[in-house]
Length: 86
Image (cartoon, rainbow, N blue to C red; front, side):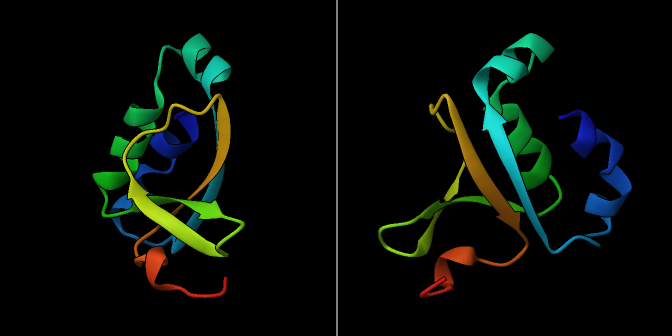
C-alpha cells in the first residue's frame, strides 16, 4: 500500500499500463491494511485487478478482494480478461 501511495501521481495520470504485485495477508495485517483497501486504491485511478488462472491460461476478474493467504495479482487499465492464451 505504501508503494501505491508513493506512486499516486503516476497512477492518477495513468502513466503505468500494467502492475504485477503480491498480496500477502500477514504483511498487510502488520501494516493495518487489508487487500480490499489495496484494490480500492488502484480502482480509484481506473485500474482493475485480476488473478491469472494457469489452467485456463487467462486472467480472471476484475476482482475486488481476495481471501487467499497470499497471491500474485495483476492490475491494468485494460480489461485483461479479454486476453486469450496469455
